[in-house]
Length: 501
Image (cartoon, rainbow, N blue to C red; front, side, top):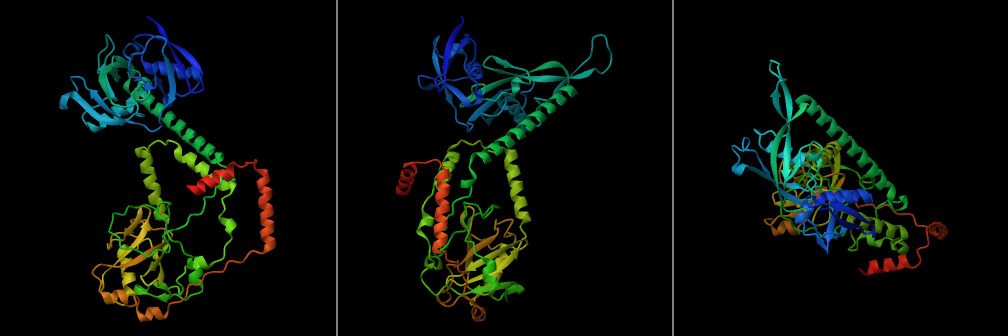
């Protein structure tokens, strides 16, 4: 007996769908979304504020005829589903219970489920089977025809290649478990033609995905105005804090200049251009600098303009854009994307030939030296040991990597760039080990010959801005503000609430 259900979306649009007792609710969702002009993969159904199981037929769903269902947006992050594949009797030999069980994401297609399970069982073939068949009245070896897989899910048969490209979510499975009963059916297509059709299909799918990804990236880059594209400057809270002892940790090959691992960047050219370079351990050129004579950090002694720290409309727009981007659901990276990411990371480190390292000692004296991509952690320890007054005392070196502070291992097999992830200009802190004597901790760290050649750090003076230039700058800023739509008091209130937080 035919009946109807009413589907209502968030904008109060409604559509009526004809149903039957055996009609699957996922098919009802597909039909409703096609009428409303939306993608069914991003939506689900609710009835009385409860999620509707889309895998069930209408007669088992508990919905009455004429029920009103809400069309709701699903999370874009795929969920995990436990899939059990029931094998035929001929294929079940050697398999416990005759079932292959594995967890899959809800965005996985049935075809990929079969491919993954047959790769797990080397002796099993589910997608590329063939059966020899001869024409009536002919003699010979015959021709090999494709034996297509057929899946049965709660009495619903999926046999065509197009049906097997549906995802678990499209079939209504967004959580829990699902049982797939596998069978085979000999088709009228020769095996070589079927394999060629499959290759053409997947090649077209990959080209469409690349074109869609390119269009999405172009739209994303154009959605944020150029005026707010530069990132806001970030302060390094740990620049003036004394180093603390750290426990050794596992260091992976990750770039050190990412937002997760703040590095103290110093202007090497400005320091070494005006100071002579001396020869250090292993004939390595180094530059030695004295500690600051003032207890106040030099940056705090520089004059600054209070208006430079006032948030502008561009800062507010940038903050809102970042909140919107961070609030969007992003799909998990596939194995191929993770592999490409690792390869790009390895290529990035391979392109780095030389880095500049500053070693800061407990008495705030520093030495600068260049290291190449073949230098190891042991080389760095030897360089630091060669300038010490007490070379036999134990010590440690650490730096801030992308994952936080980490102790550099005393290992000659760990390279500074490719293994430890150092890149660009890196600050390394010198720490006395627990076994170091009190005399070594209280006496000068560096040798007398090295300290005799230490120079003061020359900080370039920033030219002061005249009153006329500041006035012209304010006039330009005022002109730019007129081009922006008047925000009224909303921006000032928004900034005040942000400062209170």
